[in-house]
Length: 200
Image (tube, helix red, strand yellow):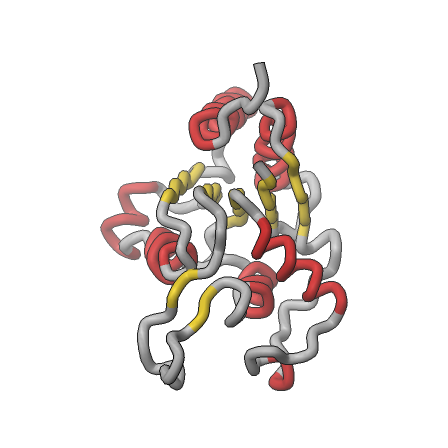
């Protein structure tokens, strides 16, 4: 399978980057093709210009490449921290510019955009790994886990990817090396479960 791995964290030595690299390494070991993007390292421009919004708009070559990769991906692994119950702005901008009409979704003929779109992504599975400094109990009680709603319902579910798994790791700021090592083993186990080996 062709799997798109996207990570968004400004620190290349972050645990987010370790998660993404661990997932990519396991995917390759399992025989999958990996397309890897660190949005901060690549200085992805998250700003959606007005002229890029219409269906069929002319796109910058870098955005065209990202769109083609998303459209052809058979799986996604998304990695980012929980900031204010949201992804970092650069990740949101990636969604804004890449999960566009004609790539990730379309409206039925005669629909002016007010209806329910049809998902176009061919991917069969999406995994989202997040990190947080909020204890899980407080996250659920006070905030209601908005990232689950965002990624599962508003993005992947809407765009046609029904097999979804998300895992939040935390509390990062107080975690030990032993804890992080255990979490990275869990990342490998999740990847194994959703993207098993494709060779004998």
